[in-house]
Image (tube, rainbow, N blue to C red; front, side, top):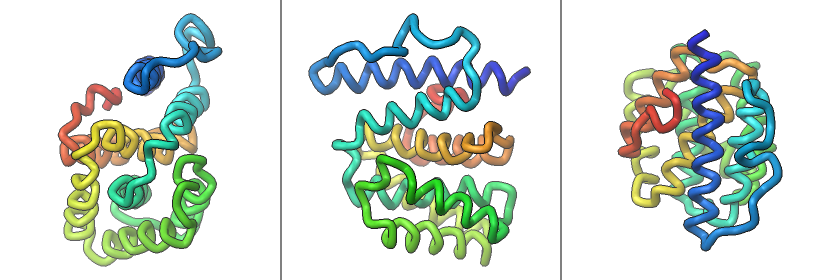
Length: 188
């Protein structure tokens, strides 16, 4: 039951952040499926969809190297959250990365190289690789929109299978700390 409550909370948070982002850009028309639209309960797939569409609405603002690098670091942390990454999991997360609409702002080769470098560091020495990934993530803290988008990108990858594992929640909380964000803002 705790996971259902977390997903409902994240769904509401995604709606709020989307409205906040629209307000920060001078407003905009209300989107279908916004407040009052959609289902009351919300499924994991709907949440991931809501986070993806919110990130897509910010795509034009998410073009910095700091966002790219921090996003690859958080994806690697999510992939290795349980302490290891098997080749199938690595390939799955890599395919999520290169097919992500927002991350298509960047050449796929750059994304793969940065993601795999972090995964390799995590595999060689988890504690050291994690410290390096968190250091990379922290560089996105200067721009709040990018910082939140990094955590959301991590949530989209973590929730792609319809479930966010406790170890994934933990590394996302640590990413929030590195970015100076409250994990509760993301239901973590």
